[in-house]
Structure formats: structure tokens, C-alpha cells
Length: 369
Ligand SMILES: Cc1ncc(COP(=O)(O)O)c(C=O)c1O
Ligand SMILES: [Zn+2]
Image 1: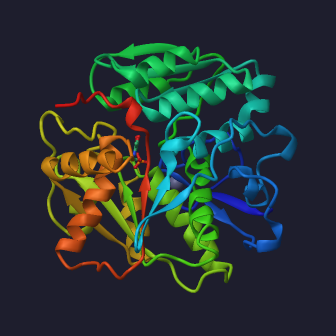
Image 2: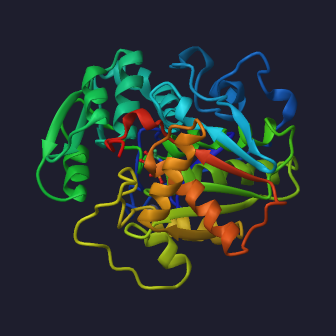
């Protein structure tokens, strides 16, 4: 076997690609790769996530469901700063990397069982999963909080997904989505290890597009942690395969309001606000199920975490737009964090940095002044 999926807490192996949590203790599952990344195994004539199909061994090459995701531009913003334009993915965010991999791996199994996919998200992940289910010809049911509205919710519905509104907390929405029902296959992006694993491709691209060099640091906005864990997984694979000598400094960027990882990482106590009002409306996980795993992995790779204020986020969002980069306020959190680290002397203008711009500004609910 080229890979093993195991519980991140008790180590119990999972034999079924449909499993989304440990059958023994209920904790998150984690992908372990038992093969090396080899440059000669890249499909050099493909310019999407599937350029790295060899390194996603649980997907049959004949069963790939794609909308052209990945191989997004890495462009030079200033002397030493690069932007990875994940906003240019087919549904407008990095989530498409996870969805293409997860749906490609599972759609035949679900189709055979005449089933449908279930996901809980009113945001980019919901939109992305709805799009890839549509592309695969699968029915999708997306569970959302009752209060949902805005462009992402419209997008979910236009892709043809069925929507179920759930009253109560975000955890209640997840519970409903996971509730066992005839024909239902839960593919929730936060729990499912294949979704996170698809995001590994982002690390491969960042390095290949820099001609197999690494930036000194990489800035990522963090909420549920799929982006962070996926990218760390990719860099670790490259290092363990001998492609890289070291992993860049991974900086996990959060908002002051939603900063459970920042606080845990710095050994500080965290009290979430009663109501989240941040402009970074995609970053809402105050109690993420993957928190322990995030802390462990971020420490393992000697990463860092930072949080930024609303003013800093809005300033970064506006500055990016005025320079031609119209991204979500949640994505601007990473740029705001970079600027703050420059100010604090934690990084220098001479050190190469890559900032991942995770989602398109066309989905924002903000209005111009
Ligand atoms: C635009 C955008 N950026 C960043 C994130 C954070 O990703 P994660 O939840 O995987 O930490 C999200 C998650 O919804 C998002 O939509
Ligand atoms: Zn377990």
C-alpha cells in the first residue's frame, strides 16, 4: 500500500476511504504517505492539481473529476513577496483542491450505492463541494446555519445542491449533516482526511513554481485548519522525500476575534466573542475539531502564529484591491499578518515570503465606502 489512513490520536488504521473519523475513538483521521515525491513522476503536460496525480494514489486516473483547479499563478508582488492566487480556482477559492481529490476518490462508490453527498458549510467549501458533486453527476445536500445569506449561498444553490437550514450552533449544523440517513455519504471538508490531503498539492506548486526553491516563510489564513494541515503535509512530504532540505516558516494567521490556534500555540487562554462580527467572515471556527492536530503539526515544523485586528484586515483588503488584487477580507488576513510581522521585526523585507490569497473578492458582502 502506498499510503495509510490512521487515527491522529489512537493510531487505529482506517481501511475504508469513506470513513471521516476514527471508528474506535471518533477523533480525526490522518493520511500517512508511504512513498517519495519524485520529480520525474510529475505529469508535466497537465496544468492542474492532477499534474501530481501520482502522489494521490487512492484516485484512479480514469475517475478524475476536474473543473481545472490548481496550478494557480504564483506572482511576484514586490521584491521578495509572492502571491499565490488561489482566488482564481474554478469556484473562487483554494477549497477546490480538496473537493476535486475527495470527489474523484469517492464518486464511483457513492454512485454505485445510488447515494448522495452531504456537507456542512455555507461558505466556500459548500460552494466548492456543490460544484464538484454537480460535475460528477452526484446529488449534494449542503447543511447550512439558518441565518445564511450572501453570494456564497447563492453559488451553492446555482450549482443545484439541495440546501437544509439548521437552527442553533455551527456544531448542530455539522451534527445534522453527519446524521445517518439512507443513501447519505458525509464528505464534510473539515473531517474528511481526503479533502485535507488534496490541499497538499498547493505546497508542491509553490515550490515547483519557484523552481524547487522554498520561500523563507509562507502566510496562510486559518480557521478550521484544512489549508494549514494540507500545506504542512505537502511540505513535509517534499522534505522527507529529499526534494527540500527544509520547510519554510509556516505562519498561521488568524483574526483577533477567532484565534483559538494562536492562543493555544502561544499558551494563552482564549475566550471567543459571543457574536463574531469580523469582516473576515470565512474565518469562524472558534472551536475547531482539528485544533490539537494543528498545534502539534505547527510545532513540529517550527511554524508561528499571529493574529490581526479588524483595522489591520480592512487596511490590507483595501490596499490589495487598490493594487489590483480583489480578494476576500478573509484572505487579506494573511497579507495583514505579513505586514504586521514586518513591523514587529519578525520578518524582513530581504526575506522571501509567499502569501496565499485564498478566495475571490467577488464573494465579499462588503460594500465600498
Ligand atoms: C477564503 C478562505 N480563506 C481561508 C479559509 C481558512 O481555511 P481553513 O478553514 O481550512 O482553515 C477559508 C475557510 O473557509 C476560506 O474560505
Ligand atoms: Zn482513534
